[in-house]
Length: 175
Ligand code: AMP
Image (cartoon, rainbow, N blue to C red; front, side, top):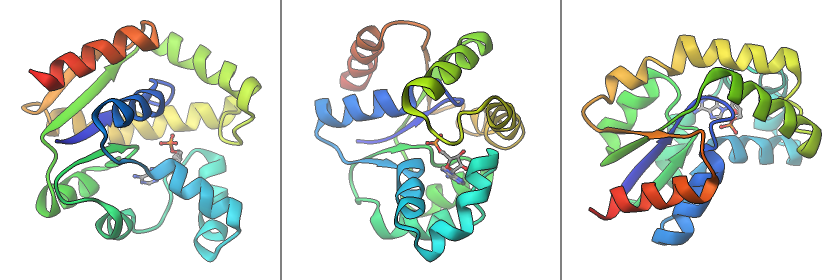
């Protein structure tokens, strides 16, 4: 099963992707985690992308190349990728997803969640200014993918408990 978990910042993509990976025993690939690790290591990629991530902009590197190197052939759960039409087209040519799970959460809930996460986890891209920029980038560059994937997308009401969402997602995938 090849799955994309898709949604705006704060929609719970990472949380659900981790649970799905455990439930279905499929590798979870988070481009955000990969990039944060590079920053942590202070690698050349990390140095190049740090400022962009902290501003809430997309990382100006070839994520397709990274995905191509690490993505398993028959099953995957992608979280945070693709984020642009160009990335989605690349993935479709290389190793297309079967399902696109879309987490639908109202804007005011997203904002409240991110501000709460800023306090709890101290992620450097969860400050009020950066959050604003991440929503802008989402609206302009990532949201158009909803139309692109419309025939493969399953929309899930994401303003519910983690357990309820997990149960619904697993039910859908097992059908
Ligand atoms: P995330 O953890 O998915 O919210 O990602 C955190 C940040 O990493 C994003 O705000 C982007 O700056 C960067 N990032 C993650 N995935 C991608 C991607 N597919 N393309 C470009 N930048 C990305």
